[in-house]
Image (cartoon, rainbow, N blue to C red; front, side, top):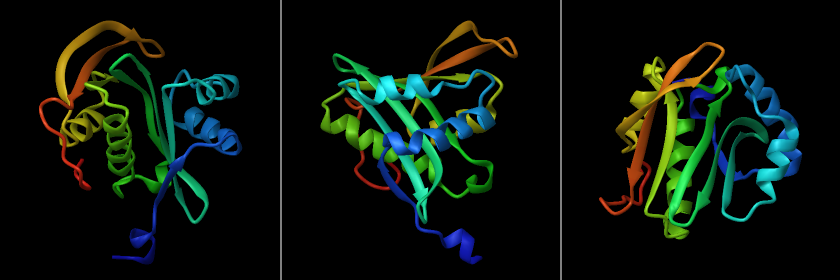
Length: 162
């Protein structure tokens, strides 16, 4: 294990100061990235949780979610390429699930590109189940989405596995 593999990751609430770097991450990861104004709007809304993963103060990744009544919907999960395969997305998801539990949400859902096997595997590892699909949900390129849900009523583990 190298020193970089043992890096300390801190999960914090995303701040407005984080937005420029988060926007850079969005452009790196997504064909239709969110704008700065979209992040600013969501950060000011009640019921929204946006978390940043930081390594030595540097943004490594983020996760975002909004809620309506007792349902959460994850907007995006992204990790910079240089920080991938180090458990950062799992840590973000675990902390988000803890926040959802505190908010007394019943479940949280997300959509993922049907062809993104790595992300689907990650979400399944984190306890999400495939519950459906959305035809032609994505563009650039056109692709179906797999709809996945984590239900808090089925059980919730308070640990690193989440």
